[in-house]
Amino acid sequence: MLNLFGNKEDAASARKVTRDTIIGDILDMDETTAPYFFEIGMHCLGCPASRGESIADACAVHGVDCDALLEKLNAHLAGKA
Image (cartoon, rainbow, N blue to C red; front, side, top):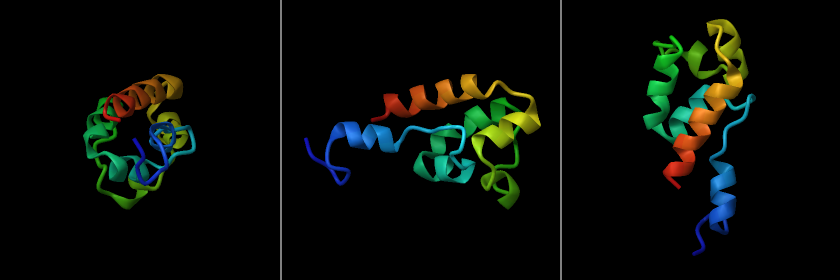
């Protein structure tokens, strides 16, 4: 089935997050990802500073394994595709 991305694979890859993905972009893409950020101690998701951080920056500040968070976020997003 075609969609605005062209096909399902393109849509899925468009929803994949990386170390460089900005947290605000992830939340805009899918607000149900917020609990994953709360889990790492990032409770002020509404403030501009936190929304403008990359996943890598947030993980460094909060002492979190970036690869583990990426795995959780991407599994969550893949389950919604």
